[in-house]
Image (cartoon, rainbow, N blue to C red):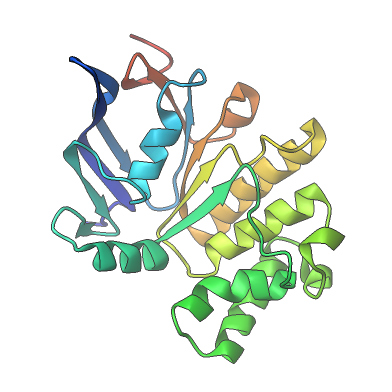
Length: 229
């Protein structure tokens, strides 16, 4: 049986506001297969970004479990969680967060360099994914020399360079104009299809989300299908 790229069971997140508990979300179950693209929509403040951060092991839930690439993360130390995050997960955000003093090639190679891979190997892999996202002719350019869409493609390449089981993207087209946003989403879908990397994408744009295999909605603290209560 093929293990899912990511499996979440019974996830809940809340905080205390004086004498009462405020739920961000509760009892969230999610299974994402390898090669599947899932879009999560919801109103601003609905908890979808908080959910993505927890799925990406950047925050911890108050309850529930997360399995990434077949590994139950519940008993891992922080160092082990960090290592698993670097090996099995990739991240793309609304703002590219590229390092301005490094070229596109070195920005993409950085996760492998941090992992202490051989620098020549890291750059070879970075070149491979930059070609995959259509930027083979921009590898020596710095972020300030690239368009917004090109910077987001570099950010996507950086997320892919470690060959993760799952990429988590938080409003990856939110800072782009409509035409560039559509191109970016189509690129995400192409990479998803060609590489078999699972993708979980938080977006407010239903037209773009329609390109995903599944659409889910954060609704009143629950993750639901088709906006149903």
